Length: 182
Image 1 (cartoon, one colour):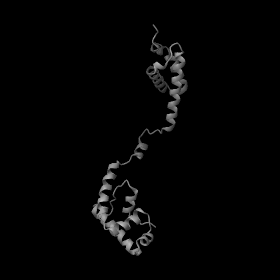
Image 2: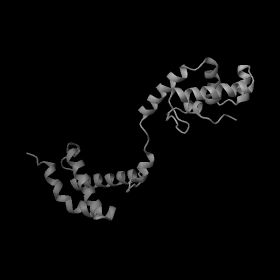
Image 3: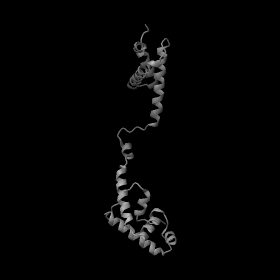
Image 4: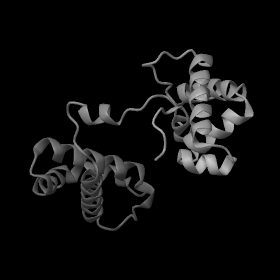
């Protein structure tokens, strides 16, 4: 009957810890590394070839685990106080989708001429002059249509003068923006 290779794992703990300390230079990190090594060895014991060098196998696992963790940590940014994570936070998409649905319903209620002017100037990035030329009307007419369309949308969406509709869609935000294209 052959001995279970798991029985040999504990024989190498001292040597593993010394090797881990030499790599990490920190006793707590070394202990974690040895523990990770033993867990990997235990779960992959079926890959160990009986009769080969258990110590060398364990040292290889420890070394590979150390360098894998080191590569992983190079890509990580320490954020002890959580300030970086807070800066990355974003509003949930569902707010934007609900606002977009409301916007589309209001936009559909505008007269065709106002929708056209607002789409050209707000979403298309056309200047008032370019939009006027495209529609075959005077520049003042386009400005008037855009102004009335924006006012109607604000009214339909129940927005106050200083209130903005939060959108996840930059085109819609451009349509609602009071700053005209150049």
